[in-house]
Image (cartoon, rainbow, N blue to C red; front, side, top):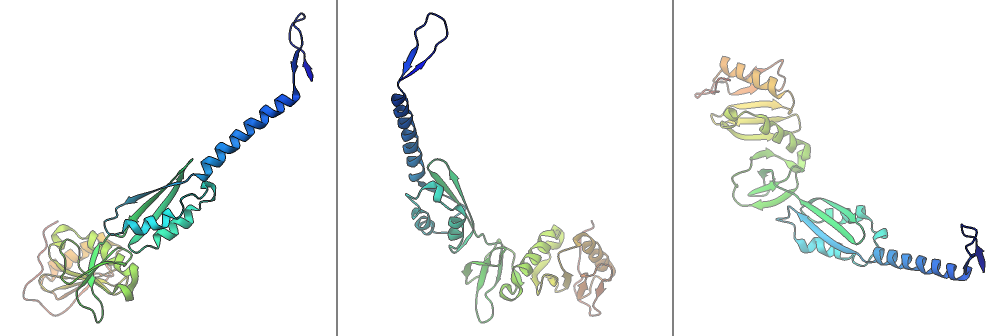
Length: 251
């Protein structure tokens, strides 16, 4: 027994049992451990699927459902993200823990941004995303996406990205005359116009300077067959003439 003095001269001493105090503290610690064990052992996985028109939800659920019942502290968000990202047509996945019992998986699918030829020996068209990954194949050329003469397999994503960047930087009055955009490499972008003229653009840099030089060339030689502005400080045109000249709106 422990006698604890209290304030005041006339108050009797308070008597506390050390054994009782220890048992009470032990019960508190035990309850805390049970609550913590319950929180880390009960796992609810919620698959928040973002932009998933083409990714089968079942493919993602099979992966995340395998985590049900695993303690939260043992979950590896990076590992789960990598597994989900390996599902076809998934571009990226983000996994976050929301304590005490929830894991959220956000899936972002690959979205087609261009149409390219089927490739050597193939027929039809392929819809590819910006990484050059095929999202869908079609027998007929679809509308609504730019058609690019790019060998994605040979040129890689950088070549595709360069062609897309050039296309996005062209003004509307020029885009209306563009028939085909292609690229042989990241610095080998070109496009043809509705009158048959070819414009050698080079890489996607110096867009404003190339547009100014191209406008000057068209004004000087409106019926040239080839306009080369890949080096805007040293532009060139072909000697062969076209019957129908290029016409650009005055800027």
